[in-house]
Length: 107
View 1 (tube, rainbow, N blue to C red):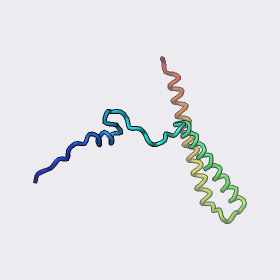
View 2: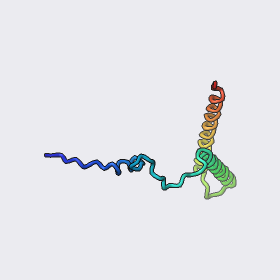
View 3: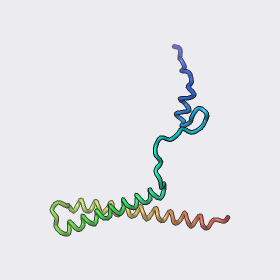
View 4: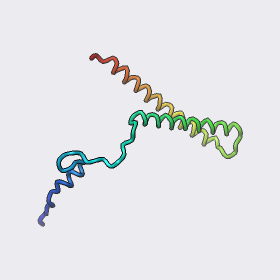
């Protein structure tokens, strides 16, 4: 049984690598999101805040004996809020540690 090899298509291989045939990067057709890290942190903090607000709302509904809100649902929301807050604190502590490490470096 003879094995046939396909001819090498350089243009296709370059396109898969994200390059034009002259080695230049392909134009990105997707929009780049502005803000980068700052926008991602802002979105994460807003998400944690919304989770905490939802847990607080559910706690108040349980205290007011609202029959449509269960204690289980409230406890799950409280745990989600707590985990999100702990993750936020961990990120903050790591950022502060990185900042202090950078500031203590000798130039």
